[in-house]
Image 1 (cartoon, one colour):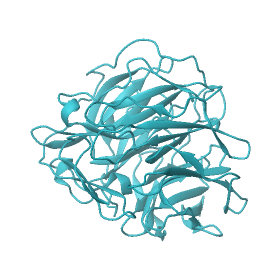
Image 2: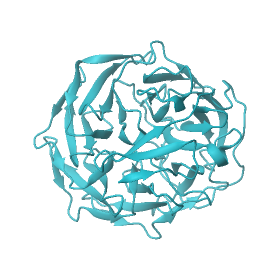
Image 3: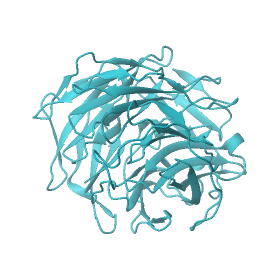
Length: 444
């Protein structure tokens, strides 16, 4: 695919394409410095105030109205791209500490990246970029060990970029990319059978925006959203596509979709990650160049409208010239969200920013920043007590000084969303430190 040095002139970032199967290997080559604007309390910048745009209203919780549903964490899984395997860990529900499962690791197909689990924690889904297929496992509820379901892996034919599971657990969706020279994308839809095997949904695959990179499904399982993340050397257009999900799992485009994200004069590399608020009312995208883009979701139609003041850039001087937003993790309790980002000014550093989301207007308020474990991919546990990140496995200098490699865990201060490292962090883990080849899921 060639070498491209772009993402406007972002923090000395170079996206290296070793092969199409390896996809966009994300390497950082800068000096080191301390994270930006660190704090531990409720101080710092505030997002723009004002009412949200749009009249949509969604149902709260995971499949019902009222308070969000949360569960204690039990297992954590992470993909090992170069090792072609999935690593399993037990999660201490009281402390968040990790210990390997007795199985330790289980084979995947070739080049496993993004992973997802159903809400009940019964099955794990892993996309394999190099072999262009989807591995599916049953999760032992007693010890977290993984067992391949009949027929796994399931062929998708093109390079998969992300996977999402419907809240019901009955349908699984995989975004794919044809090639970087012909970035046509599709969403493959599968119905989950009683034995865990998959059968294609009628009409699958479904056409979507080019450069599809991220998937998200609302808590009611009514709508699916696709974010594009163009890999181009010059500014282009990043978009969000929207579909309604039928009773048979089939996708129908939402009126007005796709939606063009806010794009700067420097780049339009979009978002390679997404999150939806537990109420189902807001879609959040960590737009690489712009900051967090927030849309209100119309609960009846699935249409999107930008929240007033969106996008919301990270704090700190120089974001417009040097910062990059990479991933987002939503608080399952609906109070906070966390964004991982990078800066290069007099050196390079990573940070994890805590924001509080107004559940009425969708307008966020910045609260604090903490040292990230070079967290190019961050995920919350299902209780909202802990946050985990893939961290600096290849010891890139761009992660800053004094940042050991491994799998990082943080406890969440529920009063202000601030993060503290869990005892034992980081845990040794043979993961890639490429954002595009990482996978992380925490199950109940």
